[in-house]
Image 1 (tube, rainbow, N blue to C red):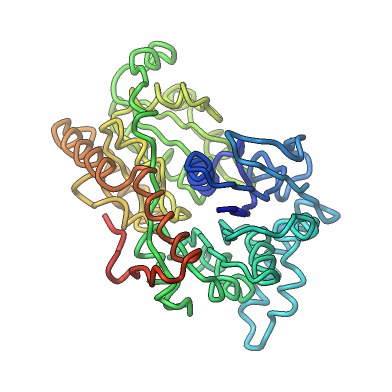
Image 2 (tube, rainbow, N blue to C red; image 1 turned 90 degrees about the vertical axis):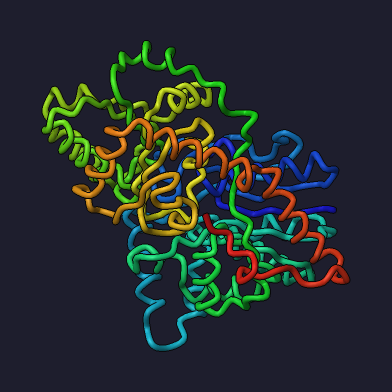
Amino acid sequence: MRILHASAAYWPFVGGAETFLQAISERLVRQGHSVLVATTDATNAQCFWDPQQPRIPIREEQVNGVRVIRSPVQHLPLAPWSFYLLRRAATDLARLPFNTLPVLDRLAPFMPGVPSLEKTLAQLRPGFDLVHGVNIALEWPLIAAWRYARRYGLPFVATPLLHVGERAVQRFYTMPHQLQALRNADRVIVLTGIEGRELGHLGVPEERIHCLGAGIDPERLQRGDAARFRARYGVDGHLVTFIGSVTDDKGAVHLVQAMRRLWNRNIRATLAIAGRPVKPSTFDRAYANLSDPERTRIHLLGPVSDDLKQDLLAATDLFVMPSRVDSFGIVYLEAWAYGVPVIGCRAGGVPDVISDGRDGLLVEFGDHASLAAAIESLLDNPELRRAMGQHGRAKVTAKYTWDHIYDGLQAVYDSLADPSMGALETPGSHPCTS
């Protein structure tokens, strides 16, 4: 099978969408399929609005057998402010009580700004068996791939990674031009039942929605050295860890505020924050407002290598990512692989991933008092931490490996390549919950 994948970013860009796409693309290649990924030259999320960010210089390459073609991100004058204004204008247009789809269609190639991507796709030799677009938040690559599929009469699969919940977040995922592509897709792959049900409410035919989840490779994990990390960073006592983009929406500021409450009560714990700061954010200001003793209890690791990440997870007592912008949260699975309990928020798809009270705890986004209480309750109870971590590890083994996810994806692809296979199960019978 010849497969075209499209997404706003791909390795070495690090993120949930990119991890998902790389995992399935490389498995498809290992199974004898041909995969081409059409993407951009972005190295991180800030590239889409900040022209000063570094880019990937290679336009075409093979990455573990996957052919990758990158189109350059382009910026409007006065970036990044022009990008912010464009996104705000698009969401405002989407709420107007008349048809704004033609205008949004014209704006789409600049969200993000990759106007050359459609031309790149048009130059590809026809002959793909299937097209799959990923990530509706940075929608143009997915929409361009959908248009390409319809132009050549090819089956189109979408994995939107919809962030469900707060209106302030969800409005960036549910504009008319975005929903048009999802409603017209032949299959829509979701990561949780929450996401699937919301898309059904938004008009995506339920019989086309299929829930797969996300995964990890357990055999590539569990090789971290806890003692090495603790010695390197002088960690003594409890270690609370955050891994992700250091942004307000990911809850990094709320976690610092929660830890500050615990330190004020003389609770001995160190906070490690691994990930790239993404601006705009209030994190720098929050960190600057800490006292010198408080700052000594935080290790800002920045982007980390895979080896350092494994050492960090091995050393961690409690993983916390109190985010409102995760459609799943693969990093929770990585923590569970080390037997570490997790804390997340009742936001996005996370409540379908974390079983509250069994393998982790859920709090409300932005409630740093409740977050502090949840952290303290687990730090004070090593037996509960151990039991929750074991439950999480068992769940990963049973449901959330890339091998499991790939089997489901292959079934979706096969059903489109060979319609005689019949319809797949819908989220109603495949809820994809914890």
